[in-house]
Structure formats: C-alpha cells, structure tokens
Amino acid sequence: MKIAVTVNEVREQVNEWKRQGFSVGLVPTMGYLHEGHKSLITCAVSENDRVVASVFVNPMQFGPSEDLESYPRDMDRDAALCEEAGVDLIFHPEPSEMYHNGFSSYVDMNTLTGGLCGKSRPVHFRGVCTVVAKLFNIVMPDRAYFGQKDAQQLAVIRHMADDLSYGIEIKGCPIIREEDGLAKSSRNTYLNKEERQAALVLNRALSEGRKLIEAGERDAASIKDTVTSVINAEPLARIDYVEIVSWDLLEPVKNIDGPVLVAVAVFIGKTRLIDNFIALED
Ligand code: PAF
Image 1 (tube, rainbow, N blue to C red):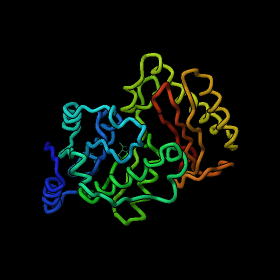
Image 2: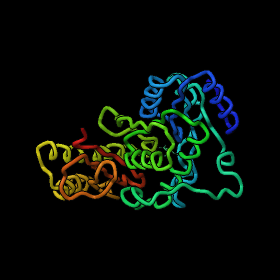
Image 3: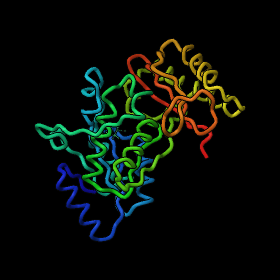
Image 4: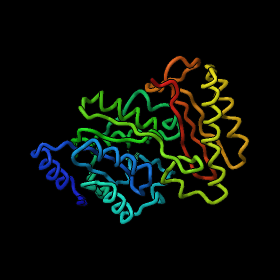
C-alpha cells in the first residue's frame, strides 16, 4: 500500500491503473477510522480492482465554532487499518495541497442542503461538495463509497454527482453500530462514560419511531413526537433536530407514503451526534 501526499502522485498511480484496465473505487474519509469506514473499504475492495482511501480532515466543512482543531487524528492507526482492509493507495494531503493560496472556487447546492444538518451547519455542505468534487476530479474513480450514517451527505453527493455528470456510481453503505446500538462515529471518542451511556438514546428513540412505522403509523408529526419525547427524557441530551423527510430529495413530509429518512441530531453534552433510519425503501 502506498501513501500519496500530492495530487500528482495520485494521478500518476491512477492513470497507470487505468492503462492496465483496472477499475478504481474511492473511499473518502476524514481519518480516525473505525469499523464503519472499514465496511466501506471492504465493500470497495469487493467491487473494484484497486481502492483509494482519502484521509483528509477538510477544514472547509467546519464552521468557525466547530471542532476542526480537536477532531481526532491518528494516521499510523489509519494506515494500518487501510492496509489490513485491502486499500491500495491512501491519499493524505496537507490542506495547502487541496486549497492553494488564493483558492476561490466552490461547489454548492441550492436544494437538499437547507434542512437537517445544513440548518445548524450553514457552511458544511459547501465544504463537503467542494472537497468531494476535488477528490472525484483527482481520483476519477468508477465508484465512490459513503456511509448512510451521514444520510444527508449521501443524498447530497448523489445529487451533485448526477447534476455535474461525473459518471461515478455513488454507493451508500449501511450504518455500523456498537454492540449496544450506538452508531459508530469518530466523534464518539469525545464522550465521557456518562455521556457514552446517554448517547444510546438516539438509537432508542429511532427504534421507537421505526416500530410505529412498522405498525402502520403514517402521520409524520406523531412519529416525530414519540422520537422527541424519548430523547427529551434523557437529561444529558439536547435536540438539534428530529426530522422526517423524503428519501432522497429530503423534502419534509406530513404523511408517509413512500421512502422516508427519519433523522435526528442530538447534543450529548457538547458532542453533536447524528443517527437515522430509512423506512419504506423498496
Ligand atoms: O464523511 C466524511 O468523513 C466527510 O464529510 C467526507 C465525505 C470525507 C468529506 O470530507
């Protein structure tokens, strides 16, 4: 496995692979990899001849009061996990390699990004779209892999790839959970013991919502009420949002009559966690 730090190194390697007729999968990450990332890599390895994983904490997708500085990083551990999972090339650029002096071009979206996480993180999706568009242009993969835990991100990237005619297959992979149900996230590392226990409320609340839908409830407001009241019963939890939107245009729904995303964002202490499920998908 190679580690490339420049755009040119990646291009040379990928061009070589393409000359040999190999298909290429891309797994974009911000590092501090866990089982969730590993499942994306495993899927990419099974569907492509060669796999590139990017490890880049993208400054552009963090707001001014967010956790860019404290975001966990451990490149040695990430490299070991990538190697074991079958990655062929890690792209690990410095911010200056991605955003040179005078950088001033962005990829943004008018739909899909205003609600859910976009409401409380107004610059986030412009940063995500810009960096993912750059990664697509650098690696030019056949397929790219994203976790469903960031369901809005997955929907946004699919839309962007279609709008901008990338011709890249965008693959969504299921949420990977701890044994007790907490969705795996690099940010779980911020939680102390008490908060870690309190964080289980996200999955607990969503499970109650899922049960209602499975029992035939179709009124979005009543499902949201149930999810909200389960979360509010946890003293360490503060709701950012509880939403039910169409999957995958992310428009609010009143009556559930097709695939929907039921999504929550909750502060546990200072840590903002997200989780979701998709219901009535074919
Ligand atoms: O999901 C992430 O880790 C990031 O948002 C991504 C897609 C790697 C872009 O920085």
